[in-house]
Structures are given as C-alpha cells and as structure tokens.
Image 1: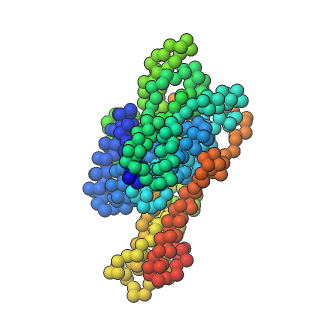
Image 2: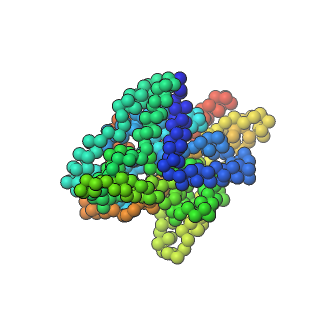
Image 3: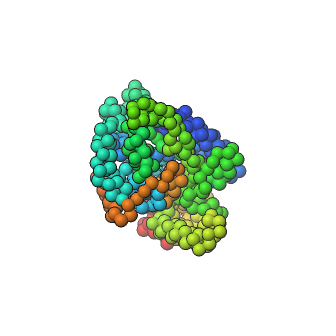
Length: 465
Ligand code: OOG
Ligand code: NI
C-alpha cells in the first residue's frame, strides 16, 4: 500500500522529472537553487532550517495549472484530493493584474502541520472566467464555453483511481503506479495541433485565455523550487545569462526575518507547438507560455501583519509615482526598516506573525514558578516560539508573475461591470469548501497554546500578553 503523503511526494517528484524534460531551463533553476541552499546551510548552520528542514525545502515545489470550467476544476480537486491536498485561499487576479488576466484562483495544498512537514507540495490553480463581460462578449463567451464543454482533460480511469485514493487515504502499489502515470500524463504539454485562428482570437483578449481555452488539454505551467536566498539565486541565474523578470515580487530583501513570500521567474520560453492553419495544414510554430519560477518562503502574517504589508505595498506604489527615478526596491527597504519590527521577538507580541509554542527543556527556565502569559513564559525560558511558515500565495505577486510573462497586454472593456466572485462562489464551483488560510494558521497557533497549557498545568487564554 502507498500512503497518501507518499503518493503526493511521488507525484511531485515525477512531475518535476517530466517538466525538466519539457523545459530544460527548469533543471538549471533547480540546480542553482540546490547550490544556493547548500551554501546558505553551510554559512548559517541551524538558523538556515528555522523555516523548515533542509529535506523539506529541497523537495519543496509548487506547480501552477489553469483550467476552463467548474467541472474541470472539480476533477482537479478529486486528483489533488487523492494526494491529501485541499483548496485554500481565494485569489482574484482579474483585479490584481493590470493586463487582462481573466481568472480566479485557489491553491491546493496539505493543511496539517505533519503533512506539510512530510511534503508540502501545492498547486496554484486558476479557473477561467468566460462570464466576465469585461473580457468576453456574449458571442465569444458562448463559443468558448462550447469549446470547453467538448474537451476531456482527465480520463475516467484517473478520476476513479483518485476517488479510491481519497476515500482510503492510500492505494495498492499497482493502482498507485497507474494513478501516478495517468496523473503526470494529464499535465504534459500536448502534441495535438492547435487551431491557430481560434488561439489568436482568444490571444487578442488575453494570452492566459488562449493558453487555457485555445487548446484541447491542460498542462503544467511552471514548477517552482524553494530557495533560502532568492537575491543570491537571482544574481547567479543572471550570471548564467538566463533572462529574469525585472524584479523579485513580494517583500523587499532586508535584515529582518523572512516574511510571507518572495518570488521571481525567468521569462517564458518559446516552445515548439503544432499549429493547424485555416486551410487544414499543420505547421510548426512556437508559443511563449511556460516559464520558470523560484520562491523564498517566510513567516505567515496575521490579518494585522498582512494589513501592514498591504499598506506598505501601496506606500511603495505612491512613492514610486512621486519619484520615478528612485529604485523601487530601495524605497521598499526603507519603508520596511521604518515600519516592520525587525525580529521574531518583536513580531510575536505585536501579533503581526504566527508562531507555535513548545515547552522548553527544564534547564532553560529562568524562574521557579511559571508566569501567567505566553510572552513572559517565552521571556523566562519556559516556552520556545517557533515561526509558522507561510504556505500560501500573494495576489499582487501572482498577478506580477502572470503579467511579466504574457506576450501581450490583451484587452478589457472597462465600461462593463465585472462578474463578482468570491471564496463562497468558488467553493460552490468546486463542490468543496475553499479554506481560509488565516483560520488554518490561527488553528495551529491556538492548538499549540492549548497543548503547552496542558503540559505546564496553566490556564492560558491564547493571547500573547
Ligand atoms: C499562476 C501565476 C501565479 C504564483 O506563484 O504566484 C503563481 C500561473 O501562471 O498560472 O504561480
Ligand atoms: Ni507560481
């Protein structure tokens, strides 16, 4: 029998192997990431593993896929459900991007701390929004929906195996092997010719719409390794003459602890694709859709911490407008130094970031009687505070990643009212509850407090003070 987490780890590893064959520059990115991680581990020792063991970080990947209909999304949820991954978070990239990115998204990922520690594989999953009149008029919408309704992304055998794996939380060896083969195959780039006129009609509206609805299958769009020093990674990739996008998305590099998520990517590469012309002949063309991305993960922020992050982003925007000659990342670094507490010890009491608490060894205690609050228990050596890793995504960064890799801006009818979608709507479309990331982090924090309270025989109310 192969357990769910081993299926997940095997799927991530095989997808990585497949993607490396399809996009060789990805392999370079993985190699450079590994070198950077080894150097950071050597230089910083145990501190390098504060946000995850080197084993977890080395194997850690996120993928990105894009689908066209709620039915396709439900099938994706069954496949990831087999791997112990649940939809977490709602991202509206239609609002976050300046170019036309007509999708709403979630991320499938494990949610329990021990499952994340075993293998945190996650997939950013986007659903096309043909009903949004800012992008699609009634005629195009109807032809697009008809096209999408006529394709099958996942064979019934794959879905049946997925259901069995999810229900039993494991699969017999031979079925696991079949499941993995079919699942990886479903995300390979198809050799099927693309109808050129249809693809180009959609591309005028949005390159993302063409990538999703212009072809008869889906594919993995990128696979992202995790790196411990993304500034160093960026320099080393640039030294190897790999053209990176202009900036690292997310928080600036700074002296304080890593927070949330920093990401960057190399530009989408021209890949050979078969194109069917209007006269029926098939020619070889090239499309630039798939790219390589890398990320550094930091500590998860509370709603207050996240509000501070969002406010600082807006401040950077307005300062950059006022001073067009200034270096954007220098502006961001200065604002962070001014407004964000520079250590874990300060972030916790201000309740800006999530930590879990653990009883420290007896010899660490600096007092005979345990004090009454979490903050004092930590200060007096009774408890250790461990940062909770940010396991999710950032809409502005995701939009930036999408956008910097699009061939054109697309178009948008700004006089039209956008169709409103939210997490509840997406839950209905998937037929599974889209979980709230803050609630998951808060649950980890509060259950660790309940646990240490029990171990020390104290009645802790859960607040830091
Ligand atoms: C997804 C882009 C967003 C991330 O890491 O923020 C993303 C896509 O290109 O389909 O992957
Ligand atoms: Ni990504």
